[in-house]
Length: 200
Image (tube, rainbow, N blue to C red):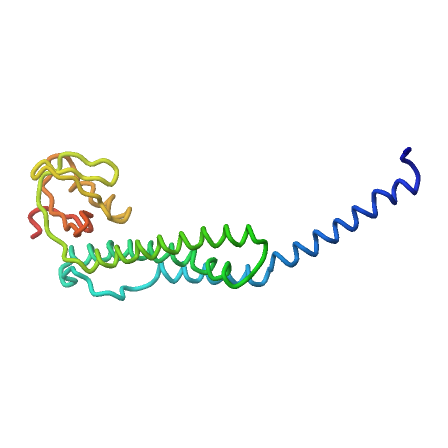
């Protein structure tokens, strides 16, 4: 067969046009702009709300003490991060359950959103329990600081510094090698507040 002229154009254009219409109809059925935008908005609102959510659980720390109050604020920050995770995934899990679309896409979205929601819920439960737990004061001599890990020479123990970046920078003098420090440590071994050993 020799291609050329209007007959050849018609032979190619008609099937292409029909295929385009079919794909457009399928795409419009599978992608719903309004639910997607609504889900994005809900996720954004939940995440912003998580960051600004005040404490809803009783603190294990004594909030009348400045160092323990700083400890509680830093531990609550970890709860907010966990809630942030839930806010990012839960709306998409609801979307995947309520709105049908491409089968594989809906299943994949549902799996990812479910995993993220479960992880966020699990970490939230852990961080809230940690926040509500009683902190313990630990005094010792700094032997090394690596990133957010502090090691004490006496007693020889390592802890994770769950401080904000600004507090970590401000505590630079207290974290010098050989300095005696007071750490408020959570039940999970996280330092929520730090100060000179003579504060207490």
